[in-house]
Length: 352
Image 1 (cartoon, rainbow, N blue to C red):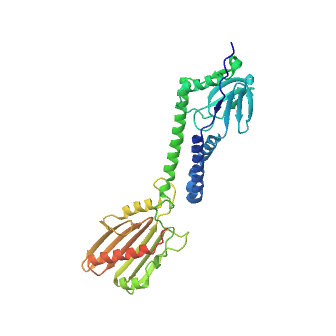
Image 2 (cartoon, helix red, strand yellow):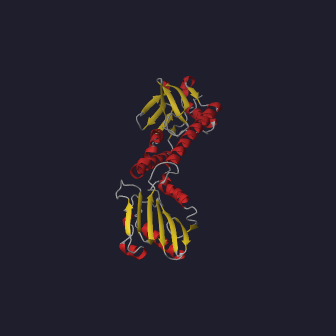
Image 3 (spheres, rainbow, N blue to C red):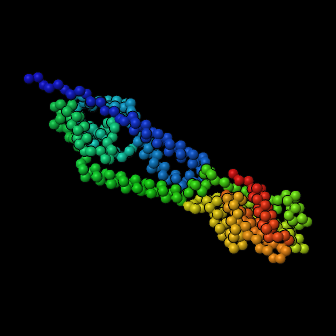
Protein backbone atom coordinates (compact mmCIF):
# COMPACT_ATOMS: atom_id res chain seq x y z
CA UNK A 1 0.00 0.00 0.00
CA UNK A 2 1.58 3.30 -1.04
CA UNK A 3 2.16 5.90 1.69
CA UNK A 4 -0.35 8.75 1.91
CA UNK A 5 0.62 11.84 -0.07
CA UNK A 6 2.48 14.55 1.81
CA UNK A 7 0.38 17.57 2.76
CA UNK A 8 0.64 20.64 0.61
CA UNK A 9 3.26 23.22 1.72
CA UNK A 10 1.93 25.66 4.27
CA UNK A 11 2.74 29.36 3.80
CA UNK A 12 2.53 31.63 6.84
CA UNK A 13 2.58 35.39 6.32
CA UNK A 14 2.46 38.38 8.67
CA UNK A 15 -0.64 40.55 8.66
CA UNK A 16 -0.36 43.41 6.16
CA UNK A 17 -3.09 45.41 7.94
CA UNK A 18 -1.49 45.02 11.35
CA UNK A 19 1.92 46.03 10.01
CA UNK A 20 0.43 49.14 8.36
CA UNK A 21 -1.47 50.13 11.50
CA UNK A 22 1.55 49.82 13.78
CA UNK A 23 3.80 51.75 11.40
CA UNK A 24 1.17 54.49 11.11
CA UNK A 25 0.97 54.63 14.92
CA UNK A 26 4.77 54.86 15.16
CA UNK A 27 4.87 57.69 12.60
CA UNK A 28 2.08 59.54 14.41
CA UNK A 29 3.85 59.30 17.79
CA UNK A 30 7.17 60.47 16.32
CA UNK A 31 5.48 63.42 14.60
CA UNK A 32 3.64 64.26 17.83
CA UNK A 33 6.88 64.25 19.85
CA UNK A 34 8.58 66.38 17.19
CA UNK A 35 5.69 68.85 17.22
CA UNK A 36 5.85 69.09 21.01
CA UNK A 37 9.57 69.81 20.92
CA UNK A 38 9.17 72.45 18.20
CA UNK A 39 5.94 74.13 19.36
CA UNK A 40 5.43 73.15 22.97
CA UNK A 41 8.87 74.10 24.28
CA UNK A 42 9.38 73.16 27.93
CA UNK A 43 5.91 71.60 28.13
CA UNK A 44 7.15 68.73 25.95
CA UNK A 45 9.79 67.81 28.53
CA UNK A 46 7.04 66.45 30.78
CA UNK A 47 6.22 63.73 28.23
CA UNK A 48 9.81 62.73 27.43
CA UNK A 49 9.94 60.08 30.23
CA UNK A 50 7.30 58.13 28.29
CA UNK A 51 9.36 58.05 25.08
CA UNK A 52 11.75 55.23 26.17
CA UNK A 53 8.75 53.01 26.86
CA UNK A 54 6.47 53.88 23.95
CA UNK A 55 8.80 54.43 21.00
CA UNK A 56 10.82 51.15 21.27
CA UNK A 57 7.57 49.24 21.75
CA UNK A 58 6.12 50.73 18.57
CA UNK A 59 9.38 50.12 16.70
CA UNK A 60 9.37 46.46 17.70
CA UNK A 61 5.69 46.24 16.76
CA UNK A 62 6.43 47.36 13.21
CA UNK A 63 9.45 45.13 12.56
CA UNK A 64 7.58 42.23 10.92
CA UNK A 65 7.09 43.44 7.32
CA UNK A 66 4.46 41.73 5.19
CA UNK A 67 6.97 40.57 2.56
CA UNK A 68 8.47 38.09 5.01
CA UNK A 69 6.96 34.62 5.07
CA UNK A 70 7.42 31.13 6.47
CA UNK A 71 7.19 28.08 4.21
CA UNK A 72 6.56 24.74 5.93
CA UNK A 73 6.77 21.55 3.85
CA UNK A 74 7.90 17.93 4.18
CA UNK A 75 11.57 18.97 4.15
CA UNK A 76 11.48 21.51 6.96
CA UNK A 77 10.85 25.15 7.61
CA UNK A 78 12.07 27.89 5.29
CA UNK A 79 12.05 31.50 6.45
CA UNK A 80 12.19 34.08 3.68
CA UNK A 81 13.25 37.68 4.29
CA UNK A 82 15.06 39.37 7.15
CA UNK A 83 18.24 38.29 8.89
CA UNK A 84 17.10 34.70 9.53
CA UNK A 85 16.85 33.54 5.91
CA UNK A 86 17.40 29.87 5.37
CA UNK A 87 16.00 26.42 5.81
CA UNK A 88 15.73 24.46 9.04
CA UNK A 89 15.28 20.72 8.35
CA UNK A 90 12.84 18.78 10.51
CA UNK A 91 15.70 16.76 11.93
CA UNK A 92 17.06 19.95 13.59
CA UNK A 93 13.74 21.10 15.02
CA UNK A 94 13.13 19.99 18.59
CA UNK A 95 9.95 21.87 19.30
CA UNK A 96 7.27 24.26 18.09
CA UNK A 97 5.56 26.60 20.52
CA UNK A 98 3.50 29.71 20.95
CA UNK A 99 5.23 32.03 23.41
CA UNK A 100 4.37 35.51 24.70
CA UNK A 101 5.99 38.16 22.59
CA UNK A 102 8.81 39.98 24.34
CA UNK A 103 8.21 43.08 22.24
CA UNK A 104 5.57 44.50 20.00
CA UNK A 105 1.82 44.18 20.43
CA UNK A 106 0.68 41.92 23.27
CA UNK A 107 0.07 38.37 22.13
CA UNK A 108 1.75 35.08 21.26
CA UNK A 109 4.28 34.52 18.51
CA UNK A 110 5.20 31.29 16.73
CA UNK A 111 8.68 29.95 17.52
CA UNK A 112 10.73 26.97 16.31
CA UNK A 113 13.29 25.37 18.65
CA UNK A 114 16.41 24.58 16.64
CA UNK A 115 19.98 23.98 17.86
CA UNK A 116 19.10 25.22 21.34
CA UNK A 117 17.78 28.57 20.07
CA UNK A 118 14.35 30.03 19.54
CA UNK A 119 13.71 31.08 15.94
CA UNK A 120 10.72 33.41 15.49
CA UNK A 121 8.59 32.63 12.47
CA UNK A 122 7.26 35.50 10.33
CA UNK A 123 3.58 35.08 10.98
CA UNK A 124 0.72 37.07 12.42
CA UNK A 125 0.75 36.81 16.18
CA UNK A 126 -2.22 35.56 18.14
CA UNK A 127 -3.71 38.19 20.40
CA UNK A 128 -4.21 37.94 24.14
CA UNK A 129 -7.81 36.85 23.69
CA UNK A 130 -7.14 34.25 21.00
CA UNK A 131 -8.70 30.86 21.63
CA UNK A 132 -6.43 27.97 22.50
CA UNK A 133 -7.96 25.68 19.89
CA UNK A 134 -6.77 28.01 17.11
CA UNK A 135 -3.19 27.60 18.30
CA UNK A 136 -3.65 23.82 18.66
CA UNK A 137 -5.03 23.60 15.12
CA UNK A 138 -2.04 25.45 13.67
CA UNK A 139 0.39 23.29 15.62
CA UNK A 140 -1.32 20.19 14.26
CA UNK A 141 -1.01 21.54 10.69
CA UNK A 142 2.69 22.12 11.22
CA UNK A 143 3.34 18.71 12.77
CA UNK A 144 1.43 17.00 9.94
CA UNK A 145 4.21 18.12 7.58
CA UNK A 146 7.07 16.84 9.75
CA UNK A 147 6.60 13.22 8.63
CA UNK A 148 8.75 10.69 10.51
CA UNK A 149 10.29 13.44 12.69
CA UNK A 150 7.04 14.12 14.47
CA UNK A 151 7.87 11.81 17.37
CA UNK A 152 10.77 13.93 18.64
CA UNK A 153 9.14 17.38 18.13
CA UNK A 154 7.48 18.86 21.19
CA UNK A 155 4.56 21.16 20.58
CA UNK A 156 3.34 23.63 23.20
CA UNK A 157 0.53 26.19 23.36
CA UNK A 158 -0.38 28.24 26.44
CA UNK A 159 -3.17 26.80 28.52
CA UNK A 160 -6.19 28.66 29.88
CA UNK A 161 -4.50 29.75 33.10
CA UNK A 162 -1.40 31.02 31.31
CA UNK A 163 -3.51 33.01 28.88
CA UNK A 164 -5.62 34.43 31.72
CA UNK A 165 -2.50 35.48 33.64
CA UNK A 166 -1.05 37.17 30.56
CA UNK A 167 -4.28 39.11 30.07
CA UNK A 168 -4.31 40.31 33.68
CA UNK A 169 -0.64 41.33 33.58
CA UNK A 170 -1.09 43.19 30.30
CA UNK A 171 -4.18 45.01 31.54
CA UNK A 172 -2.33 46.07 34.70
CA UNK A 173 0.61 47.34 32.67
CA UNK A 174 -1.74 49.23 30.34
CA UNK A 175 -3.52 50.76 33.33
CA UNK A 176 -0.20 51.98 34.75
CA UNK A 177 0.84 53.44 31.38
CA UNK A 178 -2.52 55.13 30.78
CA UNK A 179 -2.67 56.41 34.36
CA UNK A 180 0.86 57.81 34.14
CA UNK A 181 0.09 59.53 30.85
CA UNK A 182 -3.13 60.99 32.27
CA UNK A 183 -1.29 62.29 35.34
CA UNK A 184 1.47 63.90 33.27
CA UNK A 185 -1.02 65.53 30.92
CA UNK A 186 -3.05 66.87 33.85
CA UNK A 187 0.04 68.34 35.47
CA UNK A 188 1.36 69.82 32.22
CA UNK A 189 -2.12 71.03 31.10
CA UNK A 190 -1.34 71.73 27.43
CA UNK A 191 -4.66 73.54 27.02
CA UNK A 192 -3.29 76.33 29.24
CA UNK A 193 -0.31 76.96 26.97
CA UNK A 194 -0.21 79.94 24.61
CA UNK A 195 0.15 77.78 21.49
CA UNK A 196 -3.11 75.95 22.19
CA UNK A 197 -5.84 76.88 19.65
CA UNK A 198 -8.07 79.65 20.92
CA UNK A 199 -5.58 81.10 23.42
CA UNK A 200 -5.47 84.91 23.34
CA UNK A 201 -2.62 86.13 25.53
CA UNK A 202 -0.02 88.87 25.72
CA UNK A 203 3.69 88.30 26.21
CA UNK A 204 4.53 91.89 27.22
CA UNK A 205 2.87 95.15 28.27
CA UNK A 206 3.33 98.72 27.08
CA UNK A 207 4.62 101.46 29.38
CA UNK A 208 2.08 102.55 31.97
CA UNK A 209 1.92 106.23 31.05
CA UNK A 210 1.95 105.51 27.29
CA UNK A 211 -1.38 103.70 27.35
CA UNK A 212 -3.42 106.76 26.29
CA UNK A 213 -2.51 109.39 23.74
CA UNK A 214 -2.57 113.12 24.39
CA UNK A 215 -5.87 113.69 22.61
CA UNK A 216 -7.65 111.24 24.93
CA UNK A 217 -6.00 112.73 28.01
CA UNK A 218 -6.91 116.26 26.95
CA UNK A 219 -10.55 115.22 26.71
CA UNK A 220 -10.93 113.22 29.93
CA UNK A 221 -8.28 114.71 32.25
CA UNK A 222 -7.41 118.16 30.81
CA UNK A 223 -4.39 119.87 32.27
CA UNK A 224 -3.41 116.83 34.38
CA UNK A 225 0.14 115.60 34.85
CA UNK A 226 1.13 111.93 34.82
CA UNK A 227 2.84 109.87 37.47
CA UNK A 228 3.45 106.19 36.96
CA UNK A 229 5.85 103.31 36.94
CA UNK A 230 6.49 100.14 35.02
CA UNK A 231 9.49 99.80 32.69
CA UNK A 232 9.18 98.46 29.18
CA UNK A 233 10.85 95.20 28.14
CA UNK A 234 10.43 91.46 27.99
CA UNK A 235 12.10 91.03 31.39
CA UNK A 236 10.31 93.95 33.04
CA UNK A 237 7.69 93.74 35.76
CA UNK A 238 4.30 92.36 34.84
CA UNK A 239 2.50 95.39 36.33
CA UNK A 240 2.02 98.83 34.75
CA UNK A 241 0.41 101.77 36.54
CA UNK A 242 -0.13 105.42 35.81
CA UNK A 243 -2.21 108.20 37.35
CA UNK A 244 -3.27 111.53 35.92
CA UNK A 245 -4.64 114.39 37.99
CA UNK A 246 -4.10 117.78 39.60
CA UNK A 247 -4.03 119.16 43.11
CA UNK A 248 -7.28 120.99 42.50
CA UNK A 249 -9.61 117.99 42.48
CA UNK A 250 -11.27 116.05 39.65
CA UNK A 251 -10.98 114.87 37.03
CA UNK A 252 -8.54 112.16 38.10
CA UNK A 253 -7.67 108.98 36.29
CA UNK A 254 -5.81 105.90 37.51
CA UNK A 255 -4.91 102.92 35.34
CA UNK A 256 -3.44 99.61 36.41
CA UNK A 257 -2.38 97.00 33.86
CA UNK A 258 -1.46 93.49 35.07
CA UNK A 259 -0.26 90.49 33.09
CA UNK A 260 -0.34 86.98 34.49
CA UNK A 261 2.81 85.14 33.38
CA UNK A 262 2.66 81.89 31.51
CA UNK A 263 3.53 78.77 33.44
CA UNK A 264 3.24 74.99 33.60
CA UNK A 265 0.87 73.13 35.88
CA UNK A 266 -2.73 72.06 36.29
CA UNK A 267 -4.89 75.18 36.37
CA UNK A 268 -1.74 77.24 36.05
CA UNK A 269 -2.41 78.80 32.69
CA UNK A 270 -1.90 82.54 32.43
CA UNK A 271 -5.52 83.24 31.42
CA UNK A 272 -6.82 81.05 34.25
CA UNK A 273 -4.78 82.96 36.82
CA UNK A 274 -5.97 86.27 35.40
CA UNK A 275 -9.57 85.04 35.64
CA UNK A 276 -9.03 84.17 39.31
CA UNK A 277 -7.60 87.64 39.92
CA UNK A 278 -10.58 89.20 38.15
CA UNK A 279 -12.98 87.37 40.44
CA UNK A 280 -11.11 88.72 43.47
CA UNK A 281 -11.12 92.24 42.04
CA UNK A 282 -14.81 92.18 41.04
CA UNK A 283 -16.11 92.69 44.55
CA UNK A 284 -18.51 95.23 46.06
CA UNK A 285 -16.72 98.12 44.31
CA UNK A 286 -17.35 96.55 40.90
CA UNK A 287 -20.68 94.71 41.17
CA UNK A 288 -22.18 95.09 37.68
CA UNK A 289 -21.10 92.72 34.92
CA UNK A 290 -20.37 94.57 31.67
CA UNK A 291 -20.76 92.57 28.45
CA UNK A 292 -18.96 93.40 25.22
CA UNK A 293 -15.69 94.45 26.85
CA UNK A 294 -12.83 91.93 26.77
CA UNK A 295 -13.50 88.38 27.92
CA UNK A 296 -15.20 89.60 31.09
CA UNK A 297 -15.68 92.97 32.70
CA UNK A 298 -17.44 94.67 35.57
CA UNK A 299 -18.36 98.25 36.44
CA UNK A 300 -18.95 100.04 39.71
CA UNK A 301 -19.81 103.69 40.36
CA UNK A 302 -20.08 105.70 43.56
CA UNK A 303 -21.68 109.14 43.42
CA UNK A 304 -21.05 111.84 46.03
CA UNK A 305 -23.05 114.95 45.22
CA UNK A 306 -21.83 116.42 41.98
CA UNK A 307 -18.80 114.12 41.90
CA UNK A 308 -18.69 110.48 40.85
CA UNK A 309 -16.02 107.81 41.02
CA UNK A 310 -16.28 104.94 38.54
CA UNK A 311 -14.26 101.74 38.50
CA UNK A 312 -14.03 99.34 35.55
CA UNK A 313 -12.18 96.00 35.67
CA UNK A 314 -11.63 94.19 32.37
CA UNK A 315 -9.92 90.91 31.58
CA UNK A 316 -8.82 89.72 28.18
CA UNK A 317 -6.74 86.56 28.11
CA UNK A 318 -3.98 86.94 30.68
CA UNK A 319 -4.25 90.74 31.00
CA UNK A 320 -6.26 92.56 33.64
CA UNK A 321 -7.09 96.27 33.30
CA UNK A 322 -8.37 98.36 36.21
CA UNK A 323 -9.52 101.92 35.55
CA UNK A 324 -10.50 104.34 38.34
CA UNK A 325 -12.01 107.57 37.04
CA UNK A 326 -13.17 110.41 39.25
CA UNK A 327 -14.99 113.30 37.61
CA UNK A 328 -17.45 116.07 38.42
CA UNK A 329 -20.21 114.55 36.33
CA UNK A 330 -23.30 112.41 36.90
CA UNK A 331 -22.64 108.82 37.82
CA UNK A 332 -23.99 107.45 34.55
CA UNK A 333 -21.66 109.67 32.51
CA UNK A 334 -18.67 108.78 34.70
CA UNK A 335 -19.41 105.06 34.26
CA UNK A 336 -19.69 105.43 30.49
CA UNK A 337 -16.42 107.38 30.25
CA UNK A 338 -14.63 104.84 32.44
CA UNK A 339 -15.73 101.97 30.22
CA UNK A 340 -14.56 103.83 27.13
CA UNK A 341 -11.17 104.51 28.75
CA UNK A 342 -10.83 100.86 29.76
CA UNK A 343 -11.44 99.81 26.17
CA UNK A 344 -8.77 102.23 24.93
CA UNK A 345 -6.26 100.92 27.47
CA UNK A 346 -6.98 97.34 26.50
CA UNK A 347 -6.55 98.15 22.80
CA UNK A 348 -2.99 99.32 23.48
CA UNK A 349 -1.94 95.78 24.45
CA UNK A 350 -0.73 93.40 21.75
CA UNK A 351 -2.24 89.91 21.99
CA UNK A 352 -0.79 86.89 20.21
